[in-house]
Length: 249
Image (cartoon, rainbow, N blue to C red; front, side):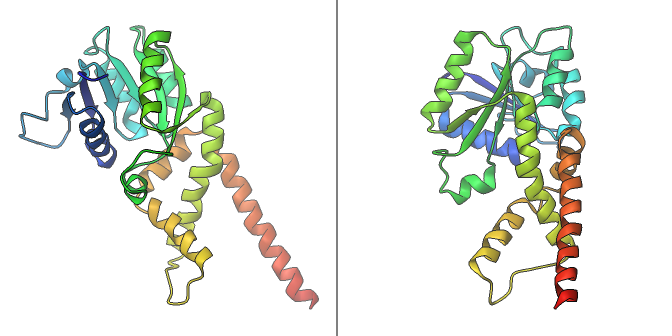
């Protein structure tokens, strides 16, 4: 794990975060990045096909672009390349990775943190949750990767793709849903906030800029529609109870 070539496809916030982690955790590795932005730094940014030929490849593109990215990448992946999949949903990307006639070596994961939460806990990985889902790697390669992650003191959670997506719909998607409702209602912090409201607004602010991710999770996670339905029904139920209470006073 010490002298790897690491390819990063996509250089948004999460791609930059992976770059930072690669430099921090694997300082002897070679990092090659592919970005659609016209970047002239030839020491870091490389043609797409060269990035795909690295030992480890991280597709850090929006979920909606994952399929087209892998359709383009599959012809350039070497037989030894490992695709380190990091999407916020698991059923959808795993289905795509398994759909190609050419075998893609992959491990499906979901870091339950990003640059915002990493910074908030003091720029450390210790104790942060990291989900590992399906993989088609050999037991030896799988063990090397999981052992390295455990050495970073991450909290490793192993889940199948469907269980992951169900849990995610009931946690991250629900957080986004409540946050977007608050943002849409234009509620904001006040001079007399309670601690509970401060915690609520912390959660809102942690996801407020992830509107495209919010939409993608809803589109590609089959469990989200049921969460949305329950949320809407509960709002109606709570409102009705309040109205009945006031009427009975």
